[in-house]
Structure formats: C-alpha cells, structure tokens
Image (cartoon, rainbow, N blue to C red; front, side, top):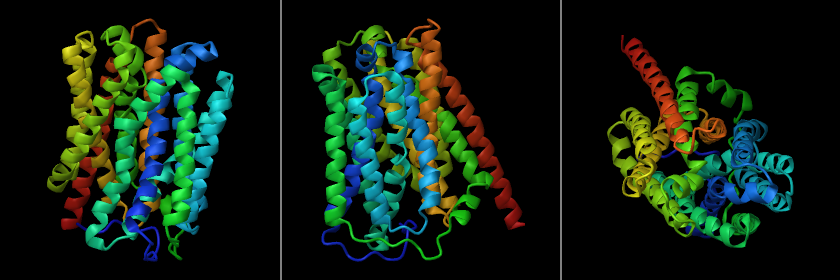
Length: 403
C-alpha cells in the first residue's frame, strides 16, 4: 500500500511508535465519544435543563457546526506549526470544552460551549492520521492510520455505551467528566510519546484552500455532508426511538449502541477489500445502502427483531461510505492532505448538524420518532445524486486526459 501523505518531513523516531499511535488513538476515542454520546444523552440533558429533546438537540448541531468551522480554520491558520504541538493544542481546547460542558446550566450556554468544543475535532482526527503515517515506513502506513482510527471505532463500541449508561445512572454531566479525563490523558500521552513532527517548509494555507475549489474535492464533501445526514437524523434520536417505538428497555440501551458500534467496526473491516477493488463503487454502495436500510427501519422500527439487525447494517453502510469518501479525497488531493483530511470530518459533522436539525423538525411537528429515519432516506437520495455527479465529472475528465 502506498504511503499516505505526511504533514511534514520524516519525523524523528519516537521512543515507542506503538505508544505514540495509542496516544493518537486516544484523541479519536475522546472526540468520538463526546460527539455520539451527546446524542444518546439527549433525554437526560433535556430533562435537566427543562427543555424538549428537539431543542436540546441544538447542542448536537452546535458541536457539529464547530467542527465545520474549526477544521478549515485551524488548518489554514497553522500550515507551518509543528504537528505535535497542533495536536496538543487541539486536545487542550477539547478538554477545556468538555469541562465547561459540565458547568453549563442553561441551553444557550450549553450550545455555545459545545460549539467551542467541536472546533478542534477535524484537526484531531485528520492531522492524527497523517502524523501516524509519518511515524512508520511507507509499507506500514496503512496499518498505522488504521490503528489511529481504531480509537474512533472503539468509541462507538465502548465509549458511547459506557457514557450513556453512566449518564443515565449518575446524571449526564458524569459522562462528560470521564470524557474530559480521556482528553487530559491524551495530552499527557502526546507529550510523553509523540515526537516533534515539523510541517513542510513549503506548506501554504493558500495552496491548501485552493485545492478545495476543485469539483472533485468539494462535490464528494457535499455528498458526505448531505448523504451522511440520513444516518445522523436517526442516530440523534436513537434513544427515544428504540425505547418508545421499538420498546427496548432503557437498561438495554447501551447494548443497542454496542450493536451499532459493532456494525461500524464490521463496516471498517469490509471497507478495506472493497476499496482495493473500487473506491468509487464502495462509496456509492455505502450511501445507497444507507438509504435502503433507513427506509426499512422507518417501516419496521416497531419490531425489535427487525430493527436491531437493521441498526447493525446501518453501521456497516455508514463505515463503507465514510471510508470510501476519505480514500477518494486523498486520491484526488495529494497536494493538500491536511485540508482534505480535516474537511472530510467537517463534512460529516455538517451532516451531523443537518441530520439533527431535520430530525428535530419532523419530531417537533408531531410525526413521531419513525420520521427521522424517513428524512434520512431523502438525505441519502440527495447524497447519491451528488456523488453520481462527481463520478460522472471524474470519468469525463479522465477521458479528456486520455484523448
């Protein structure tokens, strides 16, 4: 496998590459847990703040908007900053944001705090993957990146269910205390085990931003921002959906989230061989699959023996879609790996904000908790159309080059 683009020149050999990758993975675990647990904890947050679940979902959208703003902003302002220092700064902002979340006593304050907490999300995941590739020989870069992204996968299997169980038992703030602790541990790990990773001397914010103007970059980003909104429309309201519609007891909710996380893990394992065959077809299969599964869920959500397997399959489809778009962006923007990696996560958090907003609209309109899945089908259809347009333009450009 070819080596992923690095953020700078070859990094000095770390005292322990394994521990350095673990520290990077811890950052992914922390941001993944705080992002998804905020959705599963919505009923308790709404009750504590004296508001409705759709209104409390504004905090979810605020975090996602913070990611969308922070990813290009951090990347543009820090093109020549040492990558280790940048990751530590991002972890510090994240940790302080989660500590401030604990102290939020009103919805407006919580919304503002969650926006700030989301700012370093794209850098934490995007730059971490590039730094991971710089720590190992070229032939092992794929393994290093996958180990770093493992933190995000484990967050969905362990972190989110554990945070949900903790929040339901001890109050939602208890979950953010633990998340802030993981953020602090990430800072310590980065300081102790990650070597300096200088940025490229020729790195330029202008060059990185200019690459984003190409249709083969912004069209897949738009496809992710719209298409992935379907999954978030359902996941944002997963707690009331499976408890009120499917009839799953609250005590079993963490295991439902584990099932979804296992689906995402299975999707990551399936994505590797699929991407080796065709990046474009894999991404297309993922977004189309999401639409079909969400449609089935909207119809059969009341049957637990159908709804639970569908949640597992949604996890597979979302992983296939996200990995496909990430691979496509890296293929199309070798000259701007930092911006494309960060903006990929920004696009999916734009989907987070869109899904939470649209799902909240239909729930507030009294259409019930099946409605977010139905809205998700429309998002998937729109994302599919945009991705097909991008694929068509790509083939046309290829034919032109051949001629």
